[in-house]
Image (cartoon, rainbow, N blue to C red; front, side, top):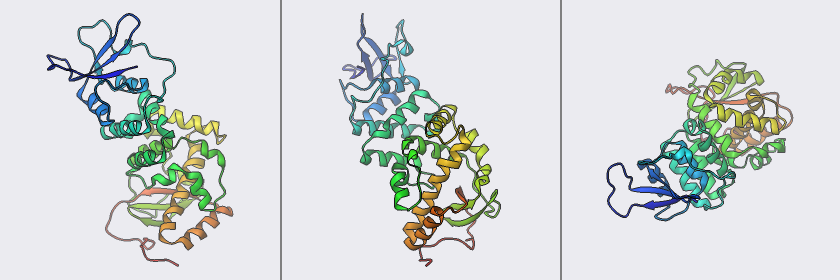
Length: 314
């Protein structure tokens, strides 16, 4: 197991204050830690002589946070076990490590590397108290709230919308990362009337809620495809195919993305007016022929005729 160590004497030359030791067949492997590396581990409450998971080591390695001094081997030469898991770390420490990564890198950067992407996807099984705060971090800057993404099956059930149970097989962190990357790239809409094959039906908090046929997603399809790192796209397509929802990203837009947007819209209205939310939910349940797309809105200082407020509508 990799072990974190604090140097007991003053570091000299290129030596780091903290380093990692791994037992080997013939000799131990010693790796110096870049400051960002040991700060990340310390943020998870690891300390001197703490053992940590192999996949954490692999993440350090992929982010170039490890180096060697006067050695014939390098971090890439380290023998790695075939099965990488997080069984050795508590949920609390896994949560702290994840938050440390999110402090230092964007969702797109983390999703662009195999090791960090797998690290993040593995936390989808964290206890709710730890996972919700991480989802909050990832989803900041999007119109989605963590409770909807964390348990969208329950959210759909509460909204009385017919729901395909196979969506429960989607990794919640995968959904959150996808939404984060996508909404970082979608440009705000200045003219809310010019939505491809759809119409704006609600605006609030800088977001435009649009309803239209499935062609509404052509307005953002190219941006979404171009913004998603290849590795993240592969994970999404893998989930789409395993759930029997299609073969490509556009299938995800029509199924997963559309459904999550609908339930987020209903959840938003629920907070403002439960009676109106029930009407919308019943409309969707009875085959309302529209999809929901939420877009960022340019701040113009002028309310549109359908601007929402905290006052009751009904």
